[in-house]
Length: 521
View 1 (cartoon, rainbow, N blue to C red):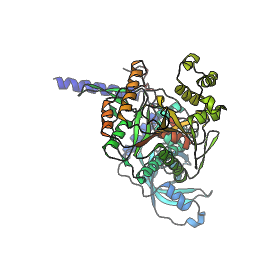
View 2 (view 1 turned 135 degrees about the horizontal axis):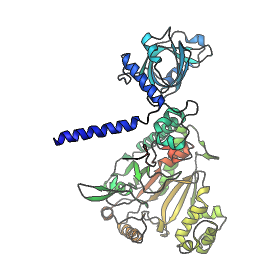
View 3 (view 1 turned 30 degrees about the horizontal axis):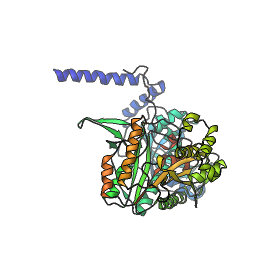
View 4 (view 1 turned 30 degrees about the vertical axis):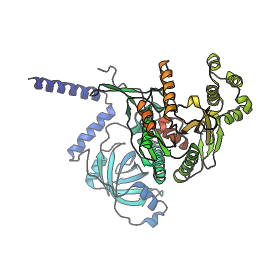
């Protein structure tokens, strides 16, 4: 009896969801549903399977575009699948503008040429349907390349109309929310995201060629560490314990260096509970790598070679445009200490940069709270002056070195001047793209810095970390001298593809939940 009640209750709920959704259908959708029904009456499944093309449009264009109409002659029978993007109907004939993901191409349908069943299906065709066609290639009287469709069938019936043919999906919010429609309507979106894939593939190959081992580390951590960021929290029911979504893979990767791997990298997803901006998405991609017996100087050379390689092998150019800026990707890249950069871009002397009072004066023209500025140490003032007055001016690829120790809890102190660490950040277009340092491998020093972080957390800093005692224990077994770096893939791709927002280079960026109905029950 209970199972029967549950079954009936489930059926009522199912019917309710179906009814509520279909009540939103437009008149155009009803027309398409009627055509789907007529397809079924013709004996044609509107959602076919097992359909395979033997070529694509890009190949056909490469083979025939350069030939004159008379040169093409008789061609093989090609089999293609594509989405119909436009229909120019002439009654007994039509041209279909189609997109198969490699290029756009037109198909010619003619009642005298196309098989009778195929022409009947064409009459039930809508803009947006996915079709299969078989035929030979020719050029029209206007010299346009086309496929003479001798066979045609609808493979997938599109129930929901695509946006207006000539303007596409122009609303930015809808483009990101309905990325699938954005990709259908805007080939440039597909191309940009394909370029991202090519860049990522090149980066991976670069690391493989340099004998790095690709690894995978946990995404759920019992301690949020490896970076200064507010984490997302979750809960493991079976263990009854709170967990943090990974803000960085750093501490696990360095454990692997302790364990005997000398070169490791991870192309990883990280999660930080921070706001949304043109350069920030709470879920993002970085590549983080560690190299035993290397220094941060080695990593500058390594990074420069990586970026110049992407330029030559993927972008096929060493000069790119981002907005109004031209960025030269061929080396050598500028290398400045943070103090040198502040001196250069504020027209100060090195002695002035070393003076706390002078740094406070430089920050007077910024939006920083003067009382908070006056309470900062010299090291934090230097970093703030750099961030406020210099960072945005580093348009060309630039390495900034010599960071104050107090803002670098995981970096190795410089042997000659312990007030600084052996660290660099890599900038392009005024954005930080990479962060690297010679790693701290002194367990006593590391414990003290963790303790300092814990004090800051206790004082209310929700980006500070707890003490990771297991990591300290790992260092006590001995980690060889190591250099490590993280590179933000999303920001790098933004610059390399001239994308104004991070949402343009992420397939599915985080958005507010969509409200489908006037009241969600």
